[in-house]
Length: 264
Image (cartoon, rainbow, N blue to C red; front, side, top):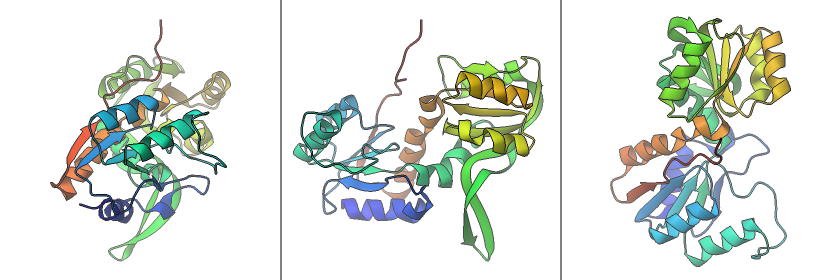
């Protein structure tokens, strides 16, 4: 199976046009005609991930976050981006990133399914698609209803368990009753106003700062901060299933779930 055949199928399902204008998605390094027998999945193209992919003799590395966001003027081993690109090229590993196009097309829905949300819809609509004679909306995050009303404390415990997290941080009254939920894997502070406007009880996301959290509570919105990595690591399981549904010609390996920080 050639790299270009795999990326064509990815882009059929998760079109690059769905990505935000500032994003950088697609094949970022390597050969389109590369024969792929081994595919490695990770959230980020860190030094450790590239080392693991190289040791496993991977032909294609697929990550959620792109290693390259802006243009670069030189590729040397003086900085971490150059070092990683040089290693990928030296090992002949093609490198593909699927970031906000994946967020829009699947990430929020995937998280909502794990939370058993019903009556779901995008939190922020960014794309309208023709599908079987009707218009389907896609976007950042997902809104839905929990199977039953519960306290914020219980909801936070559920999030911690479902996403296998070491901890979560919550803003709001522990006993606040929660039914309508918005989930935004990754960084969701920019979606706070959208969640407030849509009458959401709690926003489940990551990267929430002190003022983001207390200001949200003042506006009637509880927040559960599960961390940026905490919700987005589901990308690896989701994409593993995507590749297995579509092909059996190559092996797949996932980077072990490793939270990028630790707490005392």
